Length: 197
Image (tube, rainbow, N blue to C red; front, side):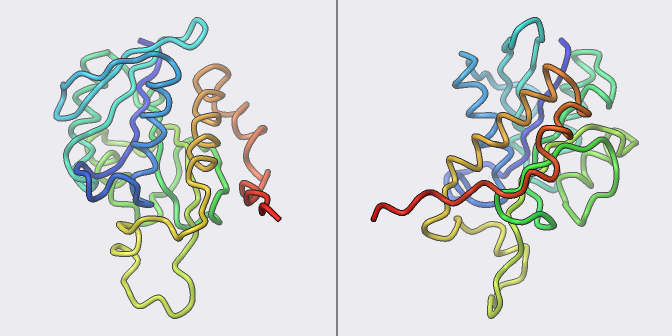
């Protein structure tokens, strides 16, 4: 196995299309496009796929977000992968909605899923695909944690967001983090869909 792609999210239908579940949505899209079939393992579900010569294990921890780390670590141990071979796909409030970026290591930005993965791996030096969800708008009374667990605002092109996250993930898998950073970082948000006038 060349790379473990760990999409972060929360299990259960009530969270399925929420901001905090973009990691799951990208893993689902990858499994669908690469003909992967899911099976239960490592307190989550996993699908093994290929893209070109690269073998990927797609993984969704089915623990809650803040307990993702031990499941990710057990999947990585099974495949004999180092932290540098574990690509974590997650939502990011510090990026504008639709801005997708790759990075290697770095801070956790208060993300409980990342914090759990770092604690379980003993390092933050793992690659990431960060999918921007922006921050709550003015007048939003819910705490950020509650807002992240809500569906996207009406009119948000969630499919375009998931597609962009999927593309960035595939570039990391095929060509590495630096190539993905050159292709995606600084490209800005996904353009909004054209209005049907």
